[in-house]
Image 1: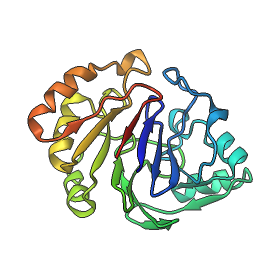
Image 2: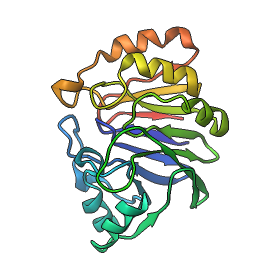
Image 3: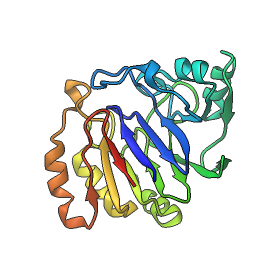
Length: 219
């Protein structure tokens, strides 16, 4: 049995097929109630882009646990120069890691090293799409049709990413079974009414799971 654990902002721990994956591990964010050194036995870290609130504590965690970091080549090379074990891949590609298939998708945002991305993680237990920081884009429909993610992790905070209205359209495009909102309430500028979002998803045939920081959803 696997789980998705949220630490606040866009930081998640996913345990799927017995493999522990961190995504955008800014564990020390203002909403988090978990300390960075509490994370152990991490196999892989996925980083969507190099902004501080997404690269986060990846360097510290990878250095302590020996976890590999997967990202675009420009960011991967930067991290490799710091002595970390990295995997560099690019948008549209799929890598295999301990039986998981990890596909790198596009995301519409900015970054200093390479391009921002999202990830679809597919295993026996489930398939999960972390969109990364992104605005709404029409090819989410293709991502949904091609990779059929059962769980989608969607930003709803607006300003830097999609807001609630755009995330509702993203659900229609991706068609996941379950959606977990992220990237909201960390800063005043991305404050969002998550209960309103949950209410608005009710007629879409999707289960909306609102996690508290540190909380988990089991699949």
